[in-house]
Length: 121
Image 1 (cartoon, helix red, strand yellow):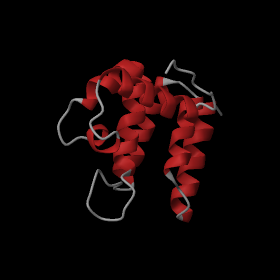
Image 2 (image 1 turned 180 degrees about the vertical axis):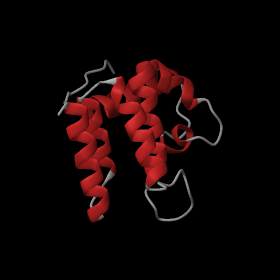
Image 3 (image 1 turned 90 degrees about the vertical axis):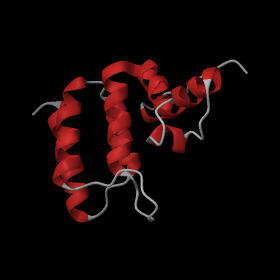
Image 4 (image 1 turned 45 degrees about the vertical axis):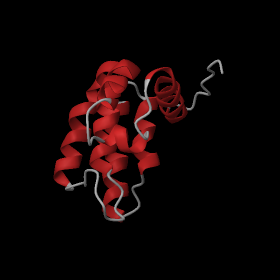
């Protein structure tokens, strides 16, 4: 069984037990493999994960979108996504722009990989 298959199997187990958290999804960044994209999107559809919403429900679908963009295009793809109105990034990152957003995104996704990002002030 590949690392991707093991990871997806673990996510399914956590979801079925009601224990899946965003932090578990972010661990996908430790396996920077684009092969994760389709299984993550399929899980989002299968479990009807929510996009951004006004309820007190974690927007797991939005996090999957962010992770998949990162796996496809890296931080550059995330920066492009920030400028999309009413999207996950604009809300979560409070419409940050430019270098500040790049540093923030880099830190978030470096943390998911278990790496401490260092950026000049």
